[in-house]
Length: 332
Image (cartoon, rainbow, N blue to C red; front, side):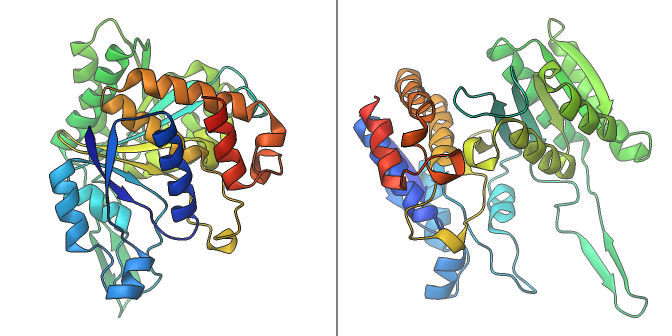
């Protein structure tokens, strides 16, 4: 039995979390939950964005499943997601994007995985505002070790999963020092895995290539801000944020999450689509070694997505969250 920290989040988070845990229970996944929360809901109750009890639970279980979390808008509130990533050195943000039968898009044959460095870059939180001159400086802190770790992780994943190519996206033609650190790390990782094709592309060209011929890419690795942008672009190629998984992974801890927002405008209405969080839970099962259960649930999910009558409104159907959930359970 695997003990997992469950973070329902806010907005539609509790609804899709219940849907996912119901499906996991129906599939007899050997999981037990320690429920904690963070974000707007805990702030309203206790004045804490990230309770100490949540941090203690994650430190104990070393694995979490997290619904969408709202960080209150206002000066002094730091992103809950960024804080958790930096607190536990979850330096890999891993986002698969794959064409799914039943979800119509403009593209076919996409099967790529993006590795985004998750703790450095422009999201380091190093900012200075000169009020007198009206100038804000945001520091793009990139370390040699951070580049090494994310590039090695991307190549190690490609090796483990039989992937054939890794593409590094950068802006070394302008960001000379930071870009060169990343390029050097990519070349060093490629030398460790000579059987994997390695290429690099400037970020603006990378964006153009992704929307013209996305099927050419396999594993992509890049820095924090570029990865944040590219990961949403890749999700858009295969149906949007509502159908893609996400994971934050470190050397000895992982938090799997829905990558879309908390959608407070539809919270409590039974309209939410749990696919993204369910697929994140499947990544968690793979991480825990429960491969067969993950495969069965994925097949049941794909069977549901093929039947529009069983899909939620964002997928072209009319089913409620609970009806969608029961369809997946029925297809197990």
